[in-house]
Every structure is written in structure tokens, then in C-alpha cells.
Length: 482
Image (tube, rainbow, N blue to C red; front, side):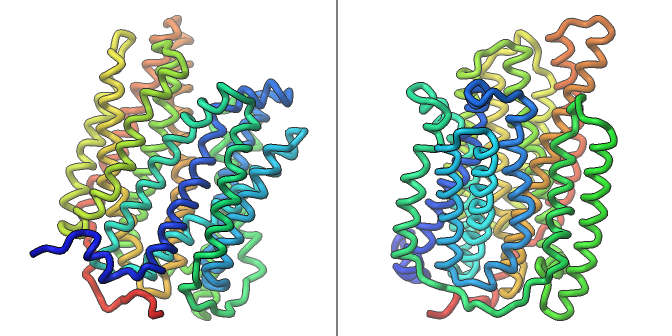
């Protein structure tokens, strides 16, 4: 007779291990929920603190910049400090930053609070992924990685909806105020219940790698955030990319040299493992597609189809929730079937959805857009869980922390790049057609059609790469001994 999930659980996870993973999952959900919750409150912030659109967008850009800078350092940090200390540090930074935002009398302090918040968020996700890899045997990792997919998918989808509900009763400060007691509660529970499951090592911090990280990843994300903004001088845009790319190349060379001495801040030897490298490439393309679509559809629905913001938010919600709900299910299927049988059909569906989205017209019914978004979200659910599991499962134990940091960094950069490229193509093509005398709706739809078709063309690379993925065989990598 087959064991039930609960009975099997007891064989490969102790109650203490389950407690640690559960606390980390809930804490990660809270910090990621906050990442998108502010988006619908930006107009309220502008009115209250008397700042313009370009200034208020820095509350989002600065968050992404900080994440891109801090995540590469987490590979070193999580090897250097115990699990419990890492959790306390992450939740303390997040809660402190949230409190600063809630109480800040001026815009500059809200911005500072967002930077502190992002520092805590950047530590939490690599900590969660690394802990699962250390505690869970290879044969059961898919199911647990499915829970990570749930967190990554549902939290961003619920963030704007939750914030919209809060804004019905209070100001933008209420969005932050709601998070403070939740953050404090998770901090107390984690401090009492989380135990150390790693063995910290005294690895020296390379003084040159950190500023190269700041300039490299920070410069790239900053440059990406400027794309499409006509008010930005060309010199500033080119300068940001030049500094970012130059510093990134120097950072990569530095890490390869330090890896020979086991002193790398971010150990790039993870890319020597083929399945990890392929997974990261497909993950980057998927994150570009996901973030680009998530920002494009609301713009198109509001500006071209003239749907109210609340309706658009509700239309986007089912897909995000479905992606999260499917995460654990896909994880269990992965443990039985492997990666390719799940990912190849899903990647083809994503390509079809891009083509369908490129056919939207002013009289397109709302349910067609919802159906497309739901189909794309379900497809990504069948891709992200296997990608996380294959990527980290392909690595030897000593590279788990660095692999988690690389995955997190790629997600931030790919999300920023996807957003910038989608919006730039959309705006440029719309403006070009409008200049010929076309109406605003027709111009916007034309820009959106080309953006979705271009994304579909690039997505073919993801389909091809998925065919080369190999599911890691269960090895002698055992969970950490207690």
C-alpha cells in the first residue's frame, strides 16, 4: 500500500526541519507580498508627499537596485553566519524598513525605508532555497520547490489586491502599517523556533568584489529602469550601461580568480554544471516574459480598451493565484516524471499565448484576455518548479548557497530587462504609428502586437533550451545530519 504524503513526510523530514521550512516559507511570502503591494499606492504617495511620477518610481527602482546588489553577496553571507542569525537579520531589516516607510514624514525617508526593506527581502529567498536543498533529499525536492513557486507566484499577485483593499480604508501608510506587526510576529516566531542547520565557515570577504557588485548589478538595473524614459539624457543611459557592464566583467573575472582559492563572493563554477547553466538561461527568458507581460497587459487594458484599474487588477488575479496553487502539484509531478515532460508542453503553450495576445483588438472580450493570462500562468507554473529543482539539484552541496544567489540575481536582472524591453517596444511602435495620424487606441494596439510577437520569437530559444534539460539523478547528497 502506498504511503500518504503525511506518512512519507515523517520519513524524510523531522518535525524540527518541517518547522524551519514552514517558518521560512511564510516569512518569504510576507516579504515578497510587500514587493508589489506598493505599486497601486504610488498615486497616493505622489499626492501626499508632492512628488512627480519619475520621482515616485524610484520607490520601485531603488527596491530592485538593492535586491540586485545584495543578492550576489548572500552566497558568501549564508556560508559565513548560522541559519538562525541569517533569518533574524533578514526579518529585522525588513520590519525596520517597513516601519520607517510607515512613519516617514518626507519622501527621502520612504525611499530609505524601501532600501532597508529590500536588503532583508534579498536575504530571505536565497536562505529559503538553500535551507530546502540542505534538508530535503533529492527524491522529494520537487514538492518543496513547488511551495517556493507558490510563494513567488501568489505573493506578487495578491500584493496589489491587498493594497487596493487597504487603500479603501486608509492612506498608503496603511499598506506599510499592516506589514509591521506581521513582520514582528514572524521575527519572534523565527527567533524561537528556527535552529541552525548549516555549519558556518570563516570565509574572508573580498574587499574589491563588493564595490564591483554594486557598480555592476546596480548599474545594469539602473540602466534598464531608464529605458523608454524620453526625459533621460542619452549620456546618462549609455553611462549607466557602460559602468554596469564594465564592472560586471571585472566582477566575473575576479570571482573566477578567487574561486581557485575558495574565496569567491559568488562562485561561478556552478555554471560548469550543464543543467544548472541551461536552467538559468530558461529561467531568465521566463522571468523576462512573465514580468514583461504583467506590466504590458494592464497598460494595454487601461489605455487601449479603457477598462478601470480595479477591473484590470481582478482580471490579473486568477492567473497569479493559479500559478501558485499549481506549484506544489507540479512539484509532486516533477518528483515522479522529471523536468522535460512537464516543461516542453508548457513552453509551447506560452508561445501560443504570445501569438494570441498579439491579436487583441478594441472589441476583444475581457474573458479572452483572462483566458490567455490564466493559460500563460499555468504554463509558467509547470516551468518554474522544475527549473528551480533542476538548477540547484545539479550542483554539489558546497555550491548550494552560491547557486541560490545566482538564481536570485538572474531573476532580478531578467525581470528588469523584460519590463524595460516590453515597455520600450510598446511605446516606440505606438509613437511611430501615432505620428502617421493613427488614433491612440490603434497605435497602442499596434505597439502591443509587435511587443508580444517579438517576445514570442525570443521565446523559441526557451523551447529549444528546454529540450536539453536533464533531470538530476538522486545521488548521495543527503540532508544535513543533526
